[in-house]
Structures are given as structure tokens and as C-alpha cells.
Length: 119
Image (cartoon, rainbow, N blue to C red; front, side):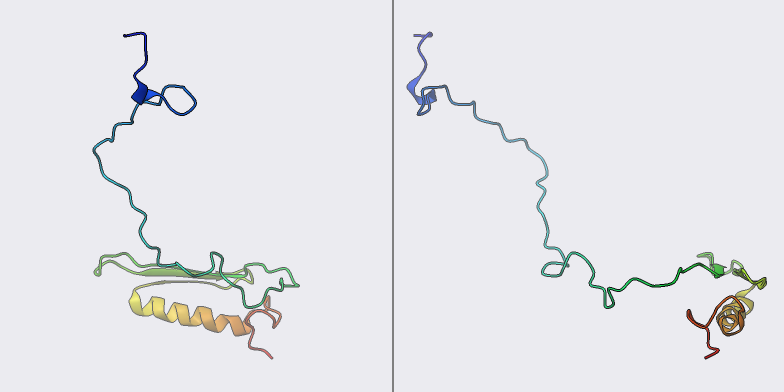
């Protein structure tokens, strides 16, 4: 009876059933509940209008603060108008950040639109 198929292996259409798959032992991957469940997938913009003027970077501020508390902090602030300052040490870098912020009001390249306090 080796030529005859066992009746339990036949499906409704007469073809032999697929062999049963063996489950592999391993770690199951279960999708956790996302913290973003129920929220829109894209952030909602408050003002969907595109800016009318061309926006270019005018000023830069770079602060390097190593994770070691005893290491020196340094900073560099520069602008396309020629403003260029550097500082080393915590107090000097804090003053550099303040000067960088104050430069926005006096920079000749800012025309009053992006952050100029001239108006």
C-alpha cells in the first residue's frame, strides 16, 4: 500500500496536504503598543504657507562642551557680515552666546524680517 496515499493526507480537491510546519524554538517578537497610538503620523503645521523670501543662513554659533566637567568649554560665533568671535571657558562662552544673540539686532545683513529688532 505504499503507492496509495493515506486518506488523512488528502485535501478536499484530492491533492496531498502540505506537510505540517515545525515550530522553531526562539524568541517571539511581539509588537508593543506605541506611544504615538491615536496620533497623526505627520506633524501638523500651524501655518501651511511657504515663506515668500529666500531664507539663507547668516549667523552661526558653535559651542563645544565635552562631557567631562573639568574639560574646557569653547565657542565660536561668526556672521557673514564679518562678525567673528571665539571664547574659551564657561563664563566666556556664556557671554559669547549673549553677544551672538545681541548681534541679531545690529547685523546689517538682517533686513528686519528674520529676527532684527530694528523695527
